[in-house]
Image (cartoon, rainbow, N blue to C red):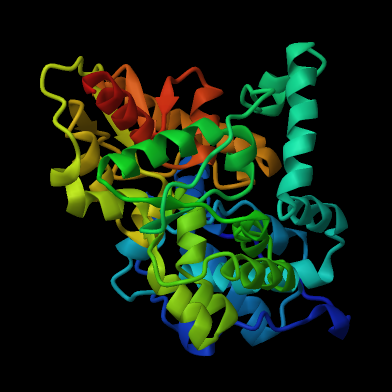
Amino acid sequence: MTAQPALSAESDQSRRLALGIDPDDLASCVACGLCLPHCPTFRVTGEEWASPRGRINAMRQVQDHGAAIDRTFTTAMDTCVQCRGCEPACPSGVPFGAMMEATQAELAHRRRVRWRRWAFSLLGHRWLLNRLSRVLAVAQKLRLVPSKRLGLPAIPVFQEKLQPSGHDVWLFTGCVMDAWQRSTHAAVQRVLEYTGAGVALPDGRAGCCGSLSVHAGLEDQARALARRTMTAFDGSAPILVDSAGCGANLKEYGKLLGTPEAAAFSERVMDVHEWLADRLDRLPSVEGADRPATVAVHDPCHLRHVQRVHQPVAEVLARVATVVTLDDDGLCCGAGGAYSALQPELAASIRVRKLAAIERSGATLVASANPGCSIHLANAGVEVRHPLEIVAQALDGAR
């Protein structure tokens, strides 16, 4: 085991700042090492500083012993995918995700992150994001943008318009997914309507849930987006989410805002597969319809490790397809929200293990319920679709 790089001591007291982590949380890690096999960066590097317990040790050195927040420390924190795969594996229940968010918030206060703050604020303006996306789509068509090198998907120039059909459930449409993958929302809406449910759609106030801002430590921005998002979903109907990362963040609004209203809002949020799994008997029969080739289910980290409701995806898919489970115990693919753009080399190295698991499965099609994961895997040549796109195609064919 490689020793973690030591944090250098500095006399400048202004650089010795507490991280704002709950001391009990910080003390809860007993350094048992059971998290190590579940940490993608440790699996790739083999370095202790790139493991959850190595990062926690670095946090202790800063918060409890006044060590400097130097480049070694920031590298250890910035290279964390924040997949939270360590949390279910931890026998002590260490809240590593909350500790990382507190640390990133402190780092954001100390560093110049204007460009990131500006970029993430853009996601909250749906009309502007959609227009810029259309410009980008045209540039792709004209081959003016190196999409493959930048890790961008093929963005459609024109998006179909979604129409509400009732008020039984809300469908959260978000920001990037609405601008780049609205056809997925359309497929999800059709599946929901096949159960007899009427689907309501939010307005532009629900443009971005703020998950990327949370990961980047931009707490004030995340809270502002959360408050605005909450105003777009009146009533008490369930709020269904077809993006794992968005769903995880929406379910944690109670913690983010710390208000009864936010906690009540989060109680209404469900992953769309979670809702459908209890209503499979309402879906039409697909007997006699063509079944797709064997489908391997990729569990997005924020569905498996944070929401912990990944099983319904396979249950819903099994109604229309032959489903196989990857044998990597849900190890991260390396997408991590904006991680693949900010840490491209590490993200690609992490993805190699996921690609090997997909190859071992023998499946020719992969289902992933998170747009970032889908894009990251597709850029490596994998055929990836949202699970409910596969379901919608089968139900449409049967009809």
